[in-house]
Image (tube, rainbow, N blue to C red; front, side, top):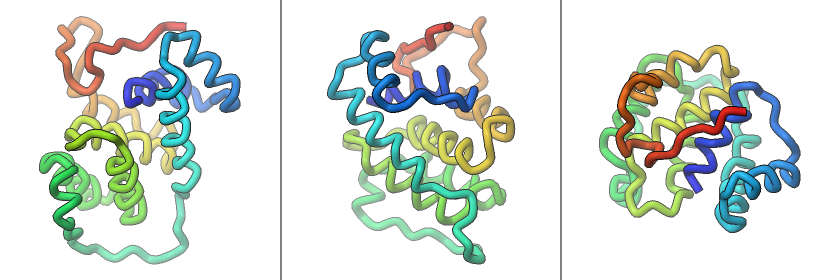
Amino acid sequence: MFDILLYLYDTYLLSEHFPDPERLSRKLSAAGFEDQAIDEALDWLAALDDLTPDEGGVEHPAIRVYNDYEIGRLATEGRGFLTFLEGSGLLPVHAREWIIDRALALSDAEVATDRVKWIALLALWKLKGAGDVLWLEDLVRGGESDDDEQDDGPLNGWQPTLH
């Protein structure tokens, strides 16, 4: 499912032109993704609609205390990345909680740091727009370029299809 989210990010989200769910499902199926994974990814992605730029309240700095379940599921470095973004003033509290919720919604036994970073990128894209998060994409991708050799990092060997 996560490969579909990355594919959608590279294919549609940066252009901010997203087909309706039925058409998108057909396109993903034609791209070779399985129907069950497509349904899971589209359900997961629909939660982006729950993330709004302004929650209407004043946010105060606070330390996030993770419960045992969250500690067991979210990679330590991923939690640290969220703390970094929040401490830098880039990530509002409500967005941090949304990221944690979406990470825990994945079926991974432990949600790796790379996945937490990608989810944070999706959240900030939603809140700030595509142009304001391109610098974060470089950080999330780890400075990869087309000339660099690819490892089995967050993309697990997946490469975007050029259209």
